[in-house]
Image (cartoon, rainbow, N blue to C red; front, top):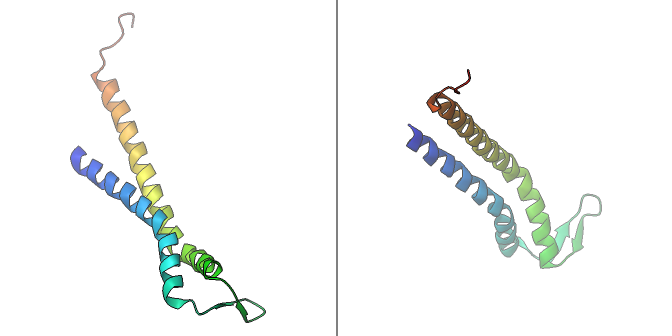
Length: 102
């Protein structure tokens, strides 16, 4: 049981790290395939922009997709780490002999 718990906890850690990296990667890949020299603004329509500015905009929009999943994976990892810590404290308390004076 403990081994499976640790494996799942490591999976959540790896998933968290991968989701942290996916935002810039998706922005760069999207910019590589979709940049045509213009950026689309909210009010002024099309305007010329550099590749890096377009990539930054793509990364901004990618955060809306991937940050909620990153948050959930990180919360799951932190929760599992906290549960493992509390379980180790309880297990340690059960193993310790009572103090001599009490």
